[in-house]
Image 1: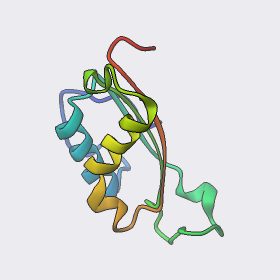
Image 2 (image 1 turned 180 degrees about the horizontal axis):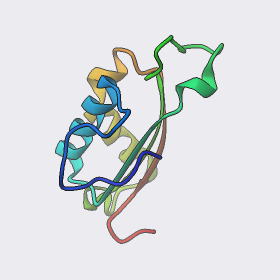
Image 3 (image 1 turned 45 degrees about the vertical axis):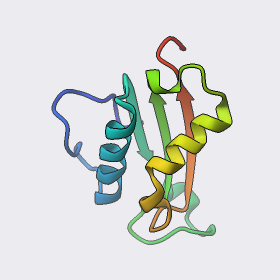
Image 4 (image 1 turned 90 degrees about the horizontal axis):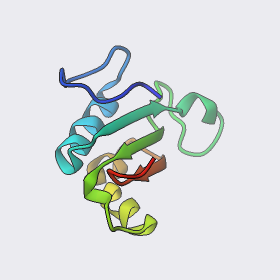
Length: 104
């Protein structure tokens, strides 16, 4: 994945505009302890939803206290709500790994 959240904020090297917006939305919604976003679009070339330029398929890992006490489905729904605009636009698929603050 692209790396943990850090205090500098903003785009990481090589991140496209969709990734930057997703990172900002997830940071605002969940104040994550860890946040990794990887553009996995190239491995889906030739499959549904792939577009030239990537930023259609992502692997996202979030560790946040906001997920404490929530089940897997509720956590996924929370992320989908936070990323609603991107999911209605260019983003075709998300692979999510979501954990609470005290989880590994």
